[in-house]
Structures are given as structure tokens and as C-alpha cells.
Image (tube, rainbow, N blue to C red; front, side, top):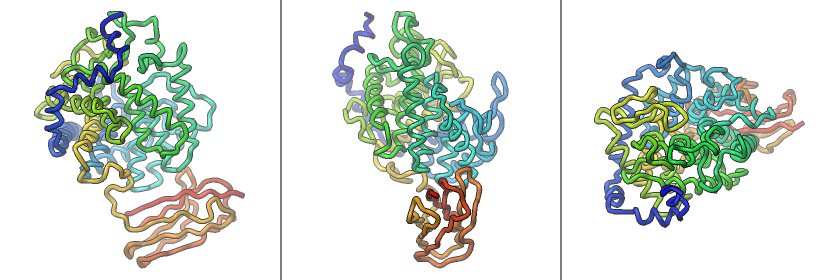
Length: 487
């Protein structure tokens, strides 16, 4: 056994507790919300100035649409920044990007099964939650629904796919209060974990994932270690955090994700570098042994999220997250906002080398997105946010509450149900019924109404059985409720 493997076989927590040294304590002492937000803003401003029009194609070795996965990850980070610092320009930048792509998945439209193409849907859904315009969510929902209604469960043959697609399934399940999304997500996840390749991509001993089946044994690194690619592990840890963040507490299979998240977290802190970064090859420090920002940012995000949510309770996780953040802002972030040490796209430690402080990766967006995700949770670690509580949802940002749409009663119903809503101020009210593709079925109310309680009976005698959405709009504010017609 090599020394790295010996360390891993020990209790990671007992080893790492010794490493809570003066440097990490100093990092905690200097963890200030204003400083964290300043670094996030610096990095984001650099990118927005470089890409003033977010809809233009990304040109590297070839031209690609700007809603591919690399840019989608950036917008995940931008929305995380917006949740703690709700600047209108961030929201507008995201909406302009989404509208420029007609709220469609990348390539393939509503027929793609590729997780990379679906990643943009995470932001589409979050923007829908802020302002529930049906077209914002209709196409990504149509695409995912086709996967749900198929029997295939082997689409996620590489672990990066978890971060790209799993939060889309989880967000749809939360928005529509439909456990079908959670169930299909679990089937696909478990196939990758236990059946993909020889016997699944998760190593139950090391508690880390092979990026895909080509990295399963007998594949080894130059020193004879299993190859665990930093960013690949980061995608999984981030996916689990983002899924758990939106799943209801009683959602099916939640315990599986929590257990795996905890196992991975222990494995990850055990191989953190002294400078706060993680290597591109987690179990072989000699394989391209420079610091790497994208994997480090994803680990920092995941660990900080776990601490903030009470999933990870030991001091070692807080220390590791802070050291990861401090390492990035001290050693990777340039004075103009450029992020160094970001490995280019690929699938293994050797790709995109050398990774250096000054070298630009072929895509700058996903590294920044991961950095912003990390910063958003480090910011919360320093105390409550000024823009919104970390316990609030995306739906509570930006547009002030003008009304409350109460649950319809009865629900399920046949053929009538009563819809009640309360207006906090006078305003023009539009109450309408939509099918689950976003097509308007009927307008129930379209007039000016005074503040107070209102009710109306929906008669669905002419409609077919199935789920529908009731949408209430009042002067820019919108809220939706799901109803089910059973005949």
C-alpha cells in the first residue's frame, strides 16, 4: 500500500482533527460576509464584462450555443449570488440568457436525454419560481417528462451527469409536488451507483466515484492508486447538496442521498491539501500535483452547505470549507476577477494540463459558477444573509408578495373545486387554469379587485382527468397551485 492509501484507511476525522491548526483558525477569524461577497462580486463582474451579451455563441475549438452545460453551471452560481445579493442586473442577465434560448434545453430541444443539455433547466426553473410564467418551465418539463415515461434508466453513465440533471428532476418534483420525479431520479442514480460498468461507479470502500466505467479497476494512476478525479467527485457532492436542498424532508429516498453525502464528505476532507486546495487526482498527489480551482470550489460548496444545513456537524468540515475558500481567494483569484488554476474540460487528471495560475481554461464559466456556489454557502457560514434567509426559497426573491393563493378544496376533485385567494393590496388580478405543458385552458378572473379574501368555483366538467395548474397574477406577482381532476 502507498502512504496515501494508508492515510485513507484510517479514520478520516481522527486524522483531520489534528490538522485544525493555526492557519485554519485564522481563516475562521477573517471570515466576514462583506469580504466573501466582495470576492464573489469581483469574479462575477469580470465575467459579465467579458460576456455583455449572454446569448452569443461560445467559440473555442468550435462554436457552441451558450446554454451548454459549462454556461449552465455559471448560471447556477449566478442565481446563488442573486439569492444573497439580489441585484436586478443579475436577474436580468439570467432572464436575457434564458429568453435568448427560448427556455429550451441545449441541442435536441425537448427530446434530448443528455444530462449536459438539461443542465440549463436548473436556472430556468429557478427563474420560473421567481416569476411563474409558464413558458419558463414548459420545455424543460416536457423534456424530463419524456424520460420519466420511458423505461430507460442508464442515461447517466458518467458521474458529471448527476450535477447536470439530478437537480432538474428534484426541482420539478418540488415545484409540482410530484414524487414521480424523485422516484425516476432515484432509479437512474442507483443504476449508475450500483450497476453501471462492472458493478457500479461508487467504490463502497473508498466512498468515492469512478468518473465512468473506464476508470474502474484495473485502471490505476502512475503510483498504483485508483483514479478519483477531483472535479468528477465535486460534481457528485454538489449534485447531492443541490438535490437535498430542494427535496422535501419526507421525499422518498432522501436518506440514501444523505448517507452517501456524509460518506463522501469524510473521504474528501481526508485528502485536502495544506493550502486548502484539492489535487486533480485525489489519491495520487504526484499525478499533476498543482492546486485546482473547479474541484476545490465544488468541494467547498458541498462541505459548507452540509455544515450550514446541519448535515455535517463536526468542526473538521467547517474548517475544511473555510480553508478551501481561503485557498481560492488568496491563491487563485486575480485582482481583476479572473480565476486561475481552473482545469479545462475533460474527464481525468491529465486533461487540460498544465493547470496554472495564469493559464485560461478553454471555458471560464463552470469554474466561476462553482466558485460562486461555494461563496454563497461560505457567506451563510459567516451569518444570516442580508438579501434573504438561507432557509428561504428562490420563489421568495425579488417580487414582493401581493397575494396568497390558497390550496384548492377539494383536491383531487370532480368536477368542481373552490379556489380561494387573499389580496394584500388592490390590484389587477388574472386567475387562469393551465395544463401541465403550460397551455392556458381557461381564464377565471381578469379584472381589478380590492384587497381582501376572494373565492371562485372552478367547474371542470369539460376537461379530461389529470393534473392542472391554477395560476394567480397580481401586478407582476404570481403564484401557482396544482390541482388534480379525477373522473
